[in-house]
Length: 527
Image (cartoon, rainbow, N blue to C red; front, side):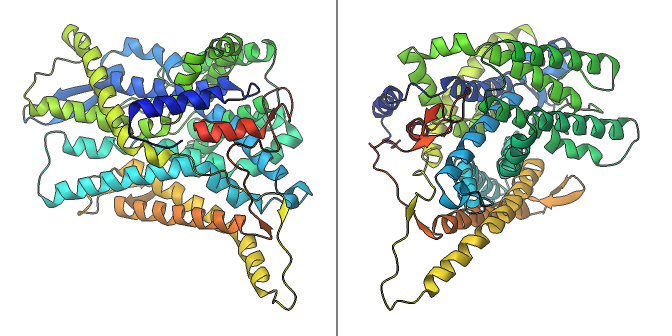
């Protein structure tokens, strides 16, 4: 979708793309993606409890710590598992579609030709906006530090603004592990999900009962991978179409989470709380995994009513427009919130006590101001989330070399293609370390070399940025090399339908690549 800078033109583009969406597209998945990120953004805005000390400096606390009675609300509002569930569904369809359109993979080869192209395609809309966000914040924080300045909120802002990057880091791992996990899923189905749940439970036993150090960090992978596997199951139609499986999943998850919190060492809140000895989020726990099962089952029970709602043109246009900027809004929403509080501090506005009557009365105004500022930031940076042309080699053989020509260029191309998969995997690993490291250390103290621990390894912001940037370049280069293998890349005209694609629940070919192509143009999760 082209960015015109004119709101009316953007609305017209969303209207055209919504009208062109094939009837076979699973619109509910697109709604879940934007709704889950929107809930997280709104929750962050509402939970921020800012207090100004006697020295005039501001500290951002958590409303749930001020009013513990609100913590049960996190059992509905902690919806990050839904996003990883949607990711599993989308990654399964995308990878299978790409394999079918790649002759070597379709013929039963290992799929190494597909891997770098798949990674580049899935990560572009994550890494491009994330790296731009990092560059802007890094430059701004460095300029403030060089000027010897920093307002009442500067240090806190430099630390908090980077926190959304943790999600990018974990999601990178989900994308990178999709091919091997899909193979396990294809062989074991529900057994692969059960194995991930059992492994996460074992980690918590070793953590809480045996006191094994550092073992809890394994659940950063196991918990989110288990929810991701549920997305694979949905892609194969194993969660429906009837309500029985989602209902069983929801009831099992809810009962298990309640039992773990009531009888085990797990806190009530499903989001991290300041000063808590144990958090369900960082690192994730078995209780959070059970919470994810409950949420996935619950939202799947809403699939029918939501599908009927999404048949309304206005509703679907809104989903299309929101999905096109969802990641940009997620990255910048804390920046917008901090900007609102910074403006209030600069104007000398009074800060009411968090959770008091005046605080609640002003909450809608603060949220509206943060939404407006987020919209402005999205207008500036949304171009970096714009989907790239559909990647992947077409099923068109490369032209034969002319008589007398040398075969060396073809050999070099084949070597580059074979090296692309390990290069892409190494690049994702670097990105993962860099993005997670930056989310831990933040943008403050760039000149002093301020560090934070990533598991047990100290990391600084410059080192984290360097790792992420080098990794991103490796993924991009490897993805292009994968496309330049022994096949030529041909892309259909933008008005032409593409070959059949993996599809919605109910069968491997229940939709078409026309739906996937429309999704890439819309910028939604099934692309």
